[in-house]
Image (cartoon, rainbow, N blue to C red; front, side, top):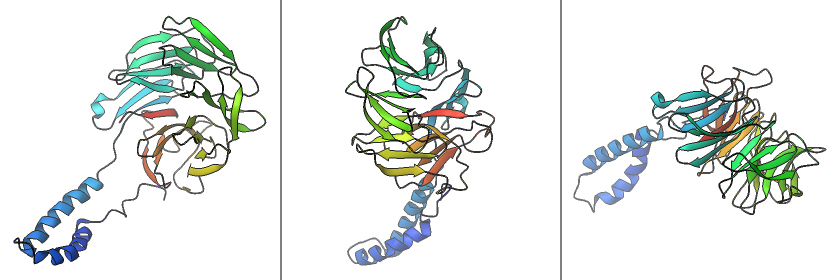
Length: 315
């Protein structure tokens, strides 16, 4: 199933018919005539059908790393949309409160106001930053290829952890135990968990170049796989137990390269379909998969965006 398909949604007439069997059995116990009940059910089913067929809408934030823009899209109220220029090398996104977004930049990171896109705080003077995460103590962890640097609100470095043994770091995620989850490459592409000293204590092979790994509540790990256009779920033994997306499964969906992802509360996966490597204008920017791997939503606007490398759903 390559696009959102509404064929599984019953029409009002179909749903009404299913109710009639029940209504006939209840008719003898009700004072309301069967004809009136049928009319009432028809109206209820028509309303329900219209609601089910309503267009899916989101409020989301995205990084375009071709035009170096931070993009806010509000499909509920498009007049609130905005775009702001950001430094090159921007990748990571974190909602740090209801009103503020933390964005990594190649030279550091910054906070932006969700309502307006106005920059309210920044750290600069770094090189090659790939990811930025706000820590529980209020400091910010900056990740680059060979180190993790913790900086305070004044931008001063308070701790640095050296990283060795792998390359192609993109985004990191800080776990509840203080460990860091990342993707990278040694002899093959990997998802890795690092301890407080930056040493790998767990790793699992990926089927392509990873961009983001995220630990699930069940202890498994989600990871994107780049050009193979999948999001895979790995158990602690490193076995793939679930796969979302895939070019073979969706040959007409124009999937190009999976980078950043957002896990919805309902289990849906929203993933950035990066259109780099000469693929600008050839596919959707963002796609969404249900837990049973159905493509249920996508966003495409080649006027607003060129290549989205990361996305985060606000609501």
